Image 1 (cartoon, rainbow, N blue to C red):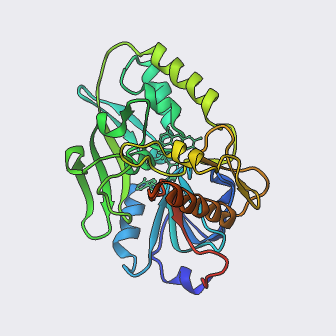
Image 2 (cartoon, rainbow, N blue to C red):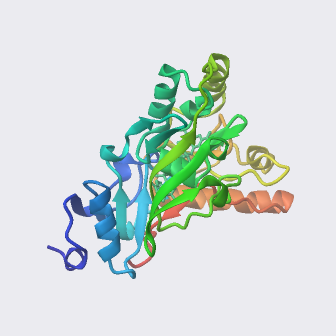
Length: 301
Ligand SMILES: Cc1cc2nc3c(=O)[nH]c(=O)nc-3n(C[C@H](O)[C@H](O)[C@H](O)COP(=O)(O)OP(=O)(O)OC[C@H]3O[C@@H](n4cnc5c(N)ncnc54)[C@H](O)[C@@H]3O)c2cc1C
């Protein structure tokens, strides 16, 4: 047993050393997590968090569709919620959903039960937890439009329920701190007809305009107020630009794709070059939407 493993509380779930999650990430890159914890259930997670030394960093991961794990790996503990955190419970007023459920599965469920308002989720890869943190959205709707409250485990306070209105949700942002773990969320209930036209529109638009079938992390940068990131990148002459195995998509310039065994460093370096070129061309500083975790190979673990 590694020294580090000895420092963490006893658990019923899985605790894996040197856990490489690159295969599960959308970019298919990145080094290992020093430790990965997959809790057995809510109580297991709660006990773990309560008893874990506060100096040890934790990183919650969902479907890794918006995260770049750097090549040198992640010092600290990754926390991944398993399928036991993916229940759906419908009450009179709300639908309560586990944080590890994939948006697409939730959208399918909503479709089957004729709950409208959730159509946009069928276009966003990722889990409910990750999508709340990112206030993910597309084509005019985002999580803040449908969320009622979240149940989280906070490292200091333990279990807590936070109403959506206190989460300061704005464009791809919430006020939930990065070491809190969303375990479930309640959504507002709309018993109306599922909007088939809107869903079909999302599907056609996406497949026609985004490299959704490639290895990517979605939009690389946030749209600066009043601008489209893809247009700034295009105007800075970056369409098709590549470094190593990473490339700016020819289809959508705000997507970086791993087209030929890229490293995380290729992807991050390319993003930084694009930021510089856009700044030189327009004076606008692009902000990364993709979350980056871990160390580069050049840094010491
Ligand atoms: C092809 C493609 C298309 C995309 N299209 C869109 C789009 O249209 N709109 C859009 O908004 N996004 C889009 N994305 C980005 C991404 O799908 C969303 O941001 C998604 O919500 C991320 O969810 P995830 O589970 O993959 O999160 P991850 O990438 O695993 O994590 C993202 C962040 O959420 C945190 N997190 C994850 N789970 C939890 C949890 N349970 N508790 C606390 N924190 C947690 C992580 O720590 C991290 O900070 C796209 C991505 C791809 C690859």
